[in-house]
Length: 184
Image (cartoon, rainbow, N blue to C red):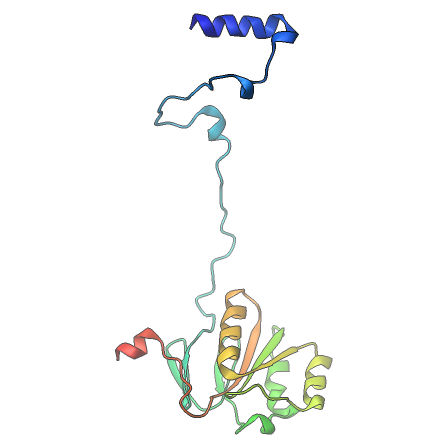
């Protein structure tokens, strides 16, 4: 205690003897405490939750050569996923995709920002005039193989984007099953 008093007076009295606290041979230590110090009370982090996640968002649980499981519901064959619903999509392969088959995506309100297209087990090119028609209506199109399209759709929905998907099941043995389906 006396040493602290002497050091304090020396620090105040002569500028030449002053040294920053980091250069002191010893550092003051705080004893164990159960309550926060005064300065810590004002540095707390607060979180305000502005909007909860929508329970109605779409999520692709799994896919197989026969179809998809979306939010726990089985959908057979090609399907179109819209922000609040799932519909059968009347295409057999990527070659059957036309402006008319995409028309349901530009008729919706609120407008869809991006449509993720799954073309089966391989990424295939869509006809240029179909992509141009979607771009003219302000809708971005992402063409991928179906497994990657499912993952991209789930990611975009989780981000809260207004997203649609047009998916063709991958042929053959390609499948992704959820843990719940594997248990059945």
